[in-house]
Image 1 (cartoon, rainbow, N blue to C red):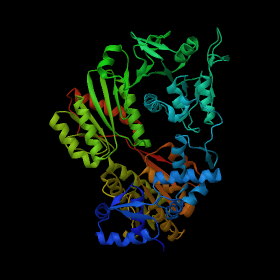
Image 2 (cartoon, rainbow, N blue to C red; image 1 turned 180 degrees about the horizontal axis):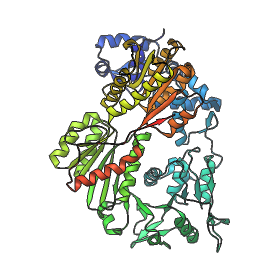
Image 3 (cartoon, rainbow, N blue to C red; image 1 turned 135 degrees about the horizontal axis):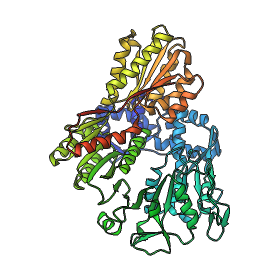
Length: 622
């Protein structure tokens, strides 16, 4: 068929992204008549891309059609990753830039896909290239990621949540430790200490690239352990931030470890560690073990006792000591510090694990662990109306005293506010404003002002106050937070610099009728290199997806980028020679938790609080 028009591309993208679509759904989404939809679909049917039967429209999945989607740049994220695996299966190893060219996406997008595939153990990244992962070691069935029990996977995922890049961790021989070892990316900047030969084998099979240390020099072959010799101590250079201890069972307020563990080595590890986490499989509760793990000598270091949701809150209150910081972990929820604390706080959080959400989540967990009067109940939602409302009602049924809404769902704000009000439950709304809620988050007008003023200052100092083009990287649709930042930034730029309204361009992600990557490339090619260009990136993902293209097509002397939210990824881009990024507004998500918990405690103690509470905004210059 001839080259597809934008409407056909949008239709094909929508159809290929779902098991099936209906004429009514397409007509509603694209605001077109059914006759127009039929007319646009006819060439796609004739080309063998889609088929219609019994009122349902389906994409025909084939190698040829995958190539067509690829050449049109409209593969979904899942299809693109499947295509990467297929291409690597043919060529064994490929350059990142080659994959980007074949898939018609930016190298940054490919790297993000590869990072996700690497987490799944499907590929291994090398310097500038990638290959299919082929284990050099035959693992036992329990060691392969797909064969771990659901309880182990749940505990493993919650354990990984506590690990941050740059920290040195200890992993023992437990199943959860081996699961964690099997999921950490080879290039994750996490030094590991282990006393287990099996955990070492898992790391070796993953080609783990960061330092792996052992606590001693004596190898107990039959026990598959590396131990301290009698009278030996850990070297002074061995620093451990977090030790994860998998106990084999628990009974009568006593923790037990496996019979092959060397207690001298394990206790030395816990004494050296800054923080200790105990992990338990609910399958082995009320089971008398052989070797006692005397956790009381490390009581001040123990942050959490993680157990899967095979145990209920009632049974846990009977079995466990009131001093244990117990955390019951489910697939998408967490119950913390059961029956121990005074206040129960519900945390409704988006499942999206981007840097910002993860930082806020971790900081809240950290702040809660420090507080001695809070029980935190966590429910994770998908960010849509149905999921948010459903999980909110579960939290309210848990009799929480206060809800922290970080669902990031604008459609549910009215319901969340009114529902909490009707139940007499206090509400903190993070980053979005719900009716009747106390707001915590960024002052978005101020964030836009900082970005606009910094950009204007640079333009006056380096380009004599003249700006030829202004490109805004944003999100399609009604997204009030980003819209406010954009309008505020433009207002403060125009106060100092004259900007022609025809010189302002918007590239929006999420528009079903426009491919943002293709639109950005077209714009970068069309604008003369000698014209000055300011690019305002209000979303970290959009900046990461666009940076390589901007550097490729633009003269950096005449191009500057102002970003939002400083992260390690952005820091790395700033280090690139001749980087056009002049700086970014930083929202300090790592400080959210402490401030939110402080605000929650004042509300629960009936102290008057401000209806608007803002995080500190800073400018990070390149």
